[in-house]
Image (cartoon, rainbow, N blue to C red):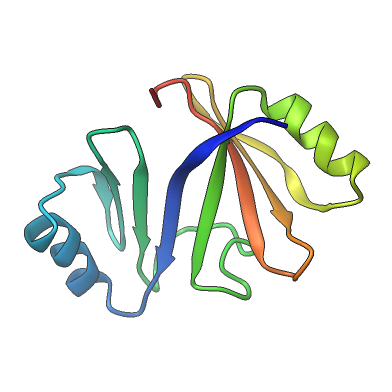
Length: 124
């Protein structure tokens, strides 16, 4: 598997508005997408940060243990999922798609923490 970087970080917080404002106003990254209790920030290099408030619609497994989850950017998600499976890594749920060729797959690392693989054609 060839991982190109960390392309996404998700933050679950009870202080949604403060975190949203921090990234928008203090860090200076414009929100690319927003809905109640959820904001997506895309950095100039293509990396994404998503802030989830208490009422956000997020996958239950994503923040079941940790409040911060990172994704590993891969070119071929199907091949990467196969490699995880062959290595005995637990996959959580099924591969999901967000449109425009964007796919993700959650998995449990050996220490029990949840990560995800991401294929994002918009990421340089």
